Image (cartoon, rainbow, N blue to C red; front, side):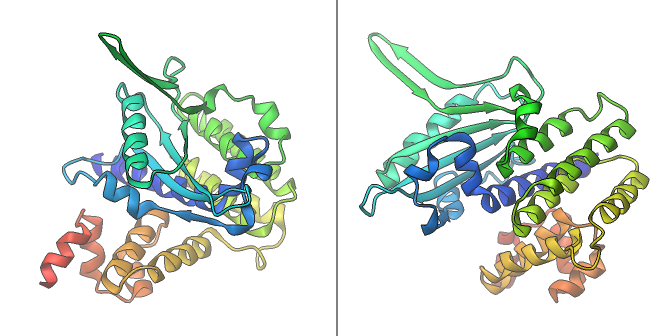
Length: 316
């Protein structure tokens, strides 16, 4: 049970980090109406994941991460080399210390970079009473209040999201449907997921963004019944009628995992490549070992929870 929960959480983390990178320009436009006037989208974005990890090192004793965080360097259109930082937290459960953590990120990021920061909290849980928007402390005349942008997916209008032409609206709709799991029958969940796929394919998005959104949709809303998984794939094939031209989920996951691996050193690249395949595909250990060109024991150790540091120590 614990291993299944761990894999589920890791998979959701991976999906969120991927979709935020793939749709970051749409993310900005979704939350900031004049984003095109403020940000220089043509200059691209720099994702400072490693820098953020240095500010907040992962606790090896934790069972699993409880949130997804991103730090992004974005250039503005003010005529100078000015750039700002966008801090994003995706929170999937109630956390009494969430606002305090948002403030901790703010002051550590500010202390390191001394740049303007805008922060966003994306709340994906189903607790209607949990909606943090600020952190506040006061004592003997000394007061502090830190406000951050906060979006409760559960509170967004499904109709407005469906009518939106912003790709990130489909991400929000996917989360809203996923929240209903366990509250409705799986056949109903299947129909809602299929409706979302039809809506996605009806939008005039680029092929790259459709692939990214379809990947997120397929893996984020999960069925307990494997027959429904197969049926969904069959329905998508019928809808698109482009089986040979449309990249399947396995090809997409493999392509993304290879891209991750190429960005790192050999050991770290292999570790991240294998980890990504374990989290985002249904490949067995032997197939992953073959694809990554690593020993099957390497795959098994990662699946059992071995860290990158474990392999580094082993190689010393």
